Amino acid sequence: MVYSFVHYLEENAYSVISYAEVIIALCENVLCTPREELERQWGIESDISKLIIALYDETANSARVTEQKIAEKCLELWDVMFEKQIGQVRDLSRKLMEG
Image (cartoon, rainbow, N blue to C red; front, side, top):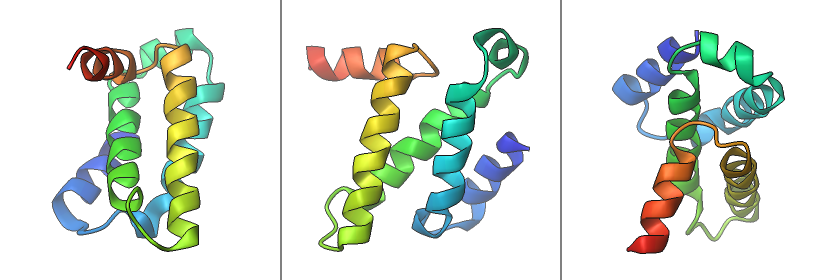
C-alpha cells in the first residue's frame, strides 16, 4: 500500500504538504516496526525516505509556522532513520557530509 501511495504522489501530486499528516504517521509507524518485519516488506524503507525528503523540501524554506514545524518533524524523523539505519538515509547523509 505504501508503494501505491508513493507512486500516486509521484504521478499526481504537485505538493505533498497536503499529505503531511499521513506521511509523518507512515514514517513513525515504520520506525516502530521491528527490523525483521521491515526487511520482509521490500522497498518500504526507501519509499518512506523519499516521502520525508519531499515533504522536507517543500516545507524547509516556508515562512508559515505550521510548515516550519513540519520541516522540523521531518528532520527529527530523518535523525531517527539515520540512527536506525533505515532506508537511504544513512548513505545520503554520509554523501552530504563528504560533499
